[in-house]
Length: 550
Ligand code: G16
Image (cartoon, rainbow, N blue to C red; front, side, top):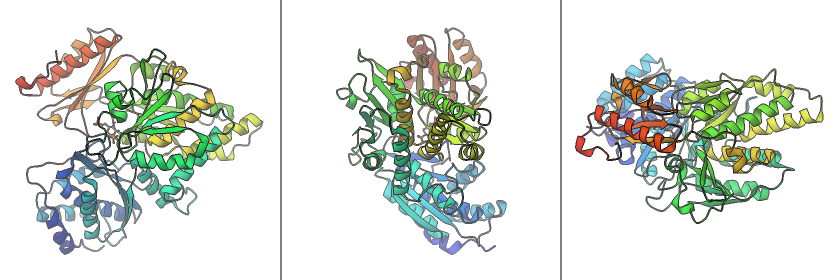
């Protein structure tokens, strides 16, 4: 054990003073707020990442600078644990505490207490790899992060401008290098090679897919998708759109996965581009979410969201496991959140075990680890598939007794390589969807017809204090403000097939309201009525009450 380098921390910390009035919170996906306010947070996250690495015996920790689906002025930062998973939740509170120490002196006191409490051996090495998305505030924030890393003398690697899933991949690849769990070469080239090789093997012998249009949200998915297309060669025709990463204000603006999912319509820029029957998909600002869609022959928009991806992918994997002769040994399960469409939950529960957990990939990821193969997607398109070590061992060691079993085992092996198992990855998921569609000879129409979504509506409500809202039962019920859940229940009862819930967002300063019902106009009405209840309850200025909140 040695002591923290106080002088070093102090001399760098004074360059990154905390803004006096702001309070920061490590939320659903790290710290996320206006980019121009995050300087001190990034500095402290640098220190925290170095300490996390020391705590884990010098394993490499990841730091991603991104605000994903949020608008361009926002930015954020999150930590990635050694296997490429989200930061262990018990450290989120520590992150919040350190970020809110008001002065450098207070920070030093908080750090000393933290090191003592968590029994960190400061003599251990610390290693960190970081990356950022394309936001204009990114470079400056990375400088603050580097100061934090240098304050602790951490070794670090700058992975440059890349997607969140690539950073997660790198973390796992670095930490497993040379072990029997080696995840791949620890470079972007290694990532692209792994995905594209697996895709080509899986698609081999199938009819060439029709052209796919990808909306890159004018974010970091664009340059990585350009590179991916080079690696994929002519195995799949892809056309990229919304690739304007240097256009101010373009990021996630009327495009991208969040826009499509929330507004349930095409990005305006695709209206005259997308042909009826053609498949298209949208990534979000850091390419960890994916939403598919198509126009039918009457040019009606149909969305294929995370729930539809789950239905498609889970049934494909179940079929392969069966064809491989492993259905006794490998059980497939699904994880969803309260946002999952009621029809998807019904469809999946009739076929597979389904678990509901709170919003946030970390919750879904951990729950999915309990299955041999865990398929998890949030309705917003954020998700992946986890193959447990048991399942992987079964797949590698099982002796096929027929050529069909052998083919199915090969497909499963290639799927394990195709899927980024560290976190939701829009590009990897897109290739996965394309593989399943090719194997099943499905167009968007057949995929969409697996089940019919219940009409639904998502509404944001700006309130005085979103922390006044707390939930239980995987966010399906409000605990506070007291009495509000009863009023929501009362309203919901009046709608055929009605369901609604309210939760504070962990990435934006709003409360989210979700509602579904058998008829679209009723789902909209229910959502806005519940939003009205929330607005009235949470002390918003009555003159600012949005008119649509009935
Ligand atoms: C992040 C999380 C997701 C979550 C989403 C919205 O996504 O990683 O798991 O669903 O935020 O969370 P909330 O409703 O709490 O704001 P992303 O793509 O923005 O990183």
